[in-house]
Each structure stands twice: as structure tokens, then as C-alpha cells.
Length: 79
Image (cartoon, helix red, strand yellow):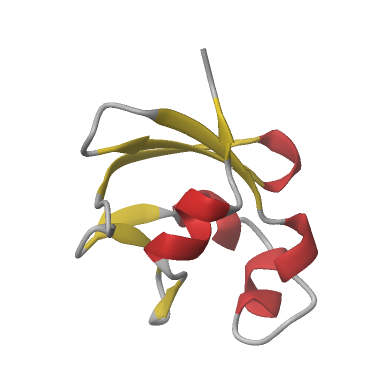
């Protein structure tokens, strides 16, 4: 089941707090992805902090995004 992300909040240490359309709030750690293309570019400057929601997933300037299924399956449910 594909769930859209409706809100993203950037935390320190490359953590994304995500809110999905079903009301779930989840935490996703991007650290393990930042040595891979295209996300390696997010390590420079404040680029990671520029995260925004676009087309139901998280995106960054420069045409960088991440699959919403990955964000859901690899994230941790928050209380």
C-alpha cells in the first residue's frame, strides 16, 4: 500500500520526522543513504535542511527525492 507523506520535519543528525496520510508519525534516519548517489549531495552545506514534501514524498532542491515506500518501510513508528 502506497501512503503519501503530508509533512516532513528535519531533525539534527539527518533524521526526518514524517507524517503520512493515514495519520502515522514516523522517524526515518537518512545517515545510511548519504554515501550513495544522489543523496551524497545532501551532506554538503545545509542542503539536507531543505527537505520538503512533493508529490507525496520527501524531496530536496536539485531534483533529489526518496521513494515513499522506503520511507515507510524503513522508518520507526512514533507514539
